[in-house]
Length: 301
Image (cartoon, rainbow, N blue to C red; front, side, top):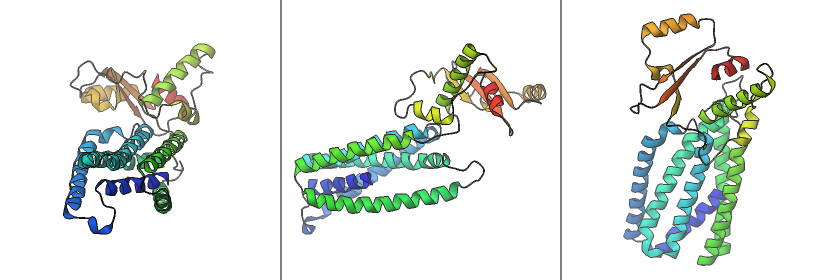
């Protein structure tokens, strides 16, 4: 809702930056400028997707929150075109690139966030997605209507536009932070796995292995970082992936399957053969259906 309000002010500032204060002053130059900035924004969107596509699923919360800052930067540059009209093409192009990156990141992480609301007993992600998109559409329409009304009330004063933009943007970031913080994932990524193992080992050292505990998903949601990457994770030194990264021979895999035939998991520690950086280390995991809480703790050790 607040984002839609801010978008109205951004669009208004773009038009004012071009000197368009009435409907008769929209010329061919203005139209070409808008087409050019949109085309460059699409190119940046494709490059961002090819570069970052695989990183969204493991850290959906973090990337969704970051996308809000990128979108805010884009809106800020749109407002800046009104203050510095001589840099219109530069600011408008960069602003559109920021918005394209933000929208791609937001849409790419949306399904992962929707999955956190899925009923574990039902595959109802389609129902959740449909309701979520419908709510987004309704809130956007209300936000646009509110933004138009607020824009008329504020007027075209540079000071007024900047003041309202700063206020709305601060409120949006505040709301987005609490929205993302409230999302609870029941699947493990690298950060959550590290915390689970660390908490279990620490607890086992204090009260014994049988009484050791691990944090609940709700507790993890309140402690994990949602903007900066975890400082304690040496991602370049440790990788966590599938058994395929170890490139086991058929004989080695058959032997492991025989040894662990009664277990719910297989762990392989070794060098990451798929990485060109030879100092990578690999921790591969294979879990089967029927895994229990105890088995998960055992696998992570």
